[in-house]
Length: 434
Image (cartoon, rainbow, N blue to C red; front, side, top):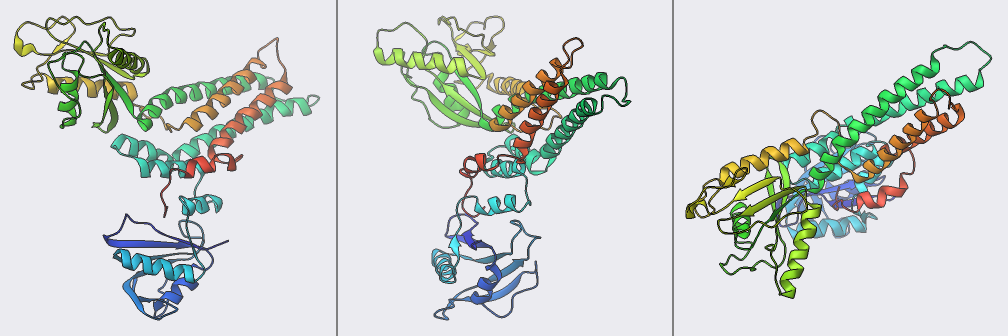
């Protein structure tokens, strides 16, 4: 096993740079870099760092060592905390390569932690999501995985499936011996209860998956309703061109918002109307595609403008330009983007709708598409197993086989099987040094 190193902090120059080292030669490499003895485990000691070939001083910094297996990667690990200049980091990197170490690949420290059973596969995915989290709800979702709660839930379900299968196989192998008379009824009851839990988990996962990837809210309406102005007001910058000329917005514009911790992708679309302009027609076609894929549709119109019919009902209806006079129609929220009247109320409605629709409550969820697909397989296999346990159509061999398949799907999620199939995809989003 090679020994690796990487800059684990942000780009230099910076106040401090932390270089992480992991592998069998970690301590020997650090010993070759410093003047003085290695510090005791987990004790930060100030040391002068030198180039082992030229004996020229590189920097003075803190040195820490973490003996295996009580380290992040499960290997001997060390950290060099030095001044965050390009020259210092470059000189230390050159010296480490000279000592036979190699630069780490993206996610390689975490990959070693997985292979050394320091982290489960779900915890690794959660760690990747922690690094990518941009809002509090995304961070909260990721922490459910890094805490081990998700793995514990899937392991518990898998254990239940194995126990149910064992009961069926006992019936098959020892049918001549006395077994509980209500065994099959108990297996059916426990299997149905577990299926209900998986189904509820999947529903909560759908909400979590939208939070993990970002919730899409689309603003639609006729030209000159104020859609682009609303986008600019919420973004607090001029993202879209605003003009009195109808059809100014011909393409879809997006802004990322953090709304009460929920990630919202707000999309401004071309005004919906009949037009002879080929470019504008393409913009309208794109708007219609955005409407079809939206999580939240925000309809917007204004006085003397006709709101075209939508293929799906709007979740929020805004009536802009109330400062021009006239009352908003029933069921529409009146606002004036010129004065800001009604804007806070709109944000409150949007926030409450988002929290209601995309909250996962007390469920331990993931938001990972890979988990969702595997859970669908487990749910389908468990459903089939229960069908083969129905009175009159009982087939214990097939029921036991479907229970085995359901358990296999859960094992795949936590990394008990087929781990190599997903490692490349998981670590592709990791940064160097993690």
